[in-house]
Image (tube, rainbow, N blue to C red; front, top):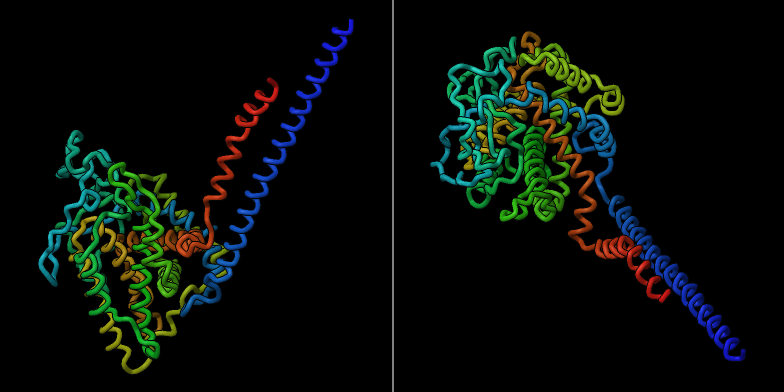
Amino acid sequence: MVEAEMGAEKMMNGKKKKNGRKRWGWAAIGCVLALLLAIALTSRASHKSCRCAQDSRKYTGIVEDCCCDYETVDSLNRAVLHPLLQELVATPFFRYFKVKLWCDCPFWPDDGMCHLRDCSVCECPENEFPEPFKKPSLLGLPLDDLVCQEGNPQATVDRTLDTMAFRGWIEIDNPWTHDDETDNGEMTYVNLQLNPERYTGYTGPSARRIWDAIYSENCPKYSTGEACQEKKVLYKLISGLHSSISIHIGADYLLDETTNLWGNNLELMYGRVLGYPDRVRNLYFTFLFVLRAVTKAADYLEQAEYDTGNHEEDLKAQSLMRQLLYNPKLQAACPLPFDEAKLWHGQSEPELRQQIQKQFRNISALMDCVGCEKCRLWGKLQVLGLGTALKILFSVNGQNHPHQPLQLQRNEVIALVNLLSRLSESVKFVNEMDPLVEMKMEGLVSESPIKDVSSWLRAWPSLAALWLRKLSL
């Protein structure tokens, strides 16, 4: 009897101890969870406070020599311009660009640098094109020929001569650019969607020589006391375009060639653009300058025929163009992105215009010296787009040339809209990534605590279950 009572008492004490261990285990689990959550919240709070401090030092006020402020530009671009432009450049009309890729450099011998896979431009099979773009004499690659593509569809390029597309457009040369846009000899159509602007491996002395020639010979940086506003505009336009190109290279960069891993190269973007506030400001300036050219040509662009033979897509392109030109948010917040009326005054205006026009033509000619075919493609497209913006704003003036109506050819409009889309994407990327890139480069915040806590929280349920099983034994 006594032994039975002692056994029962021992069993009761064992249960109490086990229950005590369970209660202690749950309390410990709760404490650890609370600790992990506190660390996570503290890390995120410090991250947020650093970001707020960083944001307070970002670009504010009116964009220099423009009529809109940075906050408005970022808001409009994020909510209106960028989504519209991304859709617009994907339509068949704006997807195909006519370009002469095989030209001798007029300034120095070809250095033969275009030997990189991602540098090349390749033809696409004939079935890539809409029926109206095809021609019986088209010499395309056989479907089973992957030598040029090297198995990489992003390295392919579509070339064709169209028979029905873009009807009603005139052939007229652009006085601001080097290429004769009325000469269709050796011209080819390129599908821009299959040839994204990205890193190609084209670096070193050959690439530097192009930019050195642009800046030193045709577009020198103006001094602090520079009185000639027109020369300042030319430099800022080229600097802004240069910044945009660098952003796109860094945003789509080959991080690991062995695994073909692509992603953001934040160090490159910081070293070339984001670490230099004047280059970021010039990017915004160029964006607003080109946006002004598009809105100034609104009547012409609204009435243009966006005809590729694909009726549904052509109507979509026309609708998107009207949404871009007459967007109520844009008209209310930034009706005049840039005021070109402030330029070209004084007795020396004709000579100055000719001088700057000649300098820009030389910059355009330098695109034939680019040793990378894809870089040459995007260089020619964006310089033609910038030349078209200059043509709209400076070559046609209602007061000085009342009998000179605006005339654009289809390739100019394609280049202009694609350039605006490229600039819009760069501005969006800078606005979203600049604070994070600067924090990373300046070492203001470490992401490892948050990552460590997150991994602990994800693993905690299984660890807690294991712990409780051990306690129950």
